[in-house]
Length: 106
Image 1 (cartoon, rainbow, N blue to C red):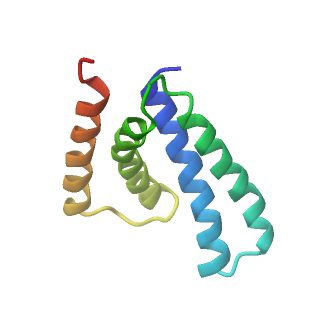
Image 2 (cartoon, helix red, strand yellow):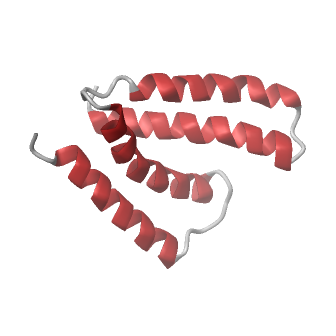
């Protein structure tokens, strides 16, 4: 699987897992929300191991930019809030940084 697809799937899994905890602790959702939340967080960790790299830290650093963009998509699609121009500008900067890390000749 290509790194970008892995990062995108990992971001969805991490955000969904964390949102399950958010829902339980901040929105009064039932505790059973934690079951799929924990499963999502396990899937997130497993997915990042699928990126072909000798260094985990580099994988995590590159993933950070993808995660930020995915978080803003979640903000819009799942929570119904519109990211503002500062959110979008920050995400673009982070995505550019992730692209440099991912595409650097090594």
